[in-house]
Image 1 (cartoon, rainbow, N blue to C red):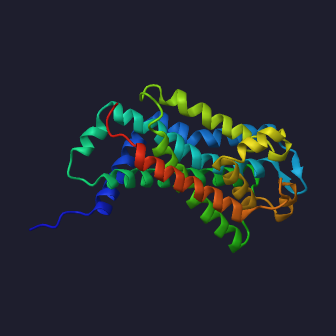
Image 2: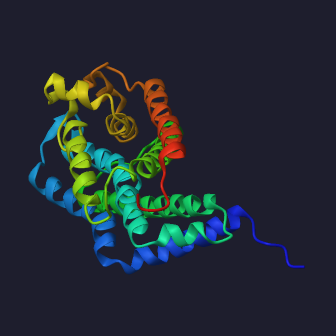
Image 3: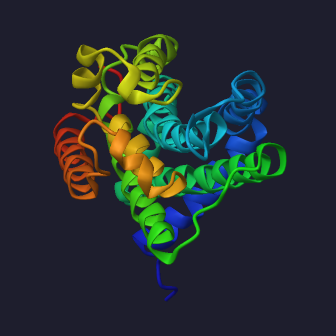
Length: 264
């Protein structure tokens, strides 16, 4: 008797299928992978001055774009595509197969992880080649980059799955999700130096993960001296990990209770 594949094996196969389907959708590929690079090219060409000794705006901006990419590829992409798959019956058909339901989510996680790796690689390659962006120079900074990125990918993915129940239909999902992400990008220090924003914007942004992701990435790509220009005059790594973990747990619990496989 042939042994049936396990949940992980099915999930990996599902992830490969998700990647193939994603690569066939030109609009999604351009928006997810190439749009951040386009923004880097535009902002890097317009803002050429230093915002601090030895820190160009491009150096600051690439940290924000990597953090924003975690939210775009995780939260935004899943919060839009899952309602569409619910509407067209994909989720209902998957629920009716013998495949474990967890394999569907494993496939989504694999898609987000691969997409993010490609996006980060392209951003760093273009940033170094065109704007002389400095890569992390110590093992400690690379270690920070890894844990911030992994925690950011995980929390954004879980939150995207949890939020996927909010849009009433797949057709209207983008109109619900995209404005939230855009507002958080402006409030969280992606496009502007965070401490130059009004205090109420800073306080609002501090509730959400993107502010802490951008701050974590700044600690990787900016010199340690720049920490003095943060709100707390430090990188606050412990607080960053705590808040991102709290959002991850909250998103997981909400997803467990509210996720729907069929249209209501």
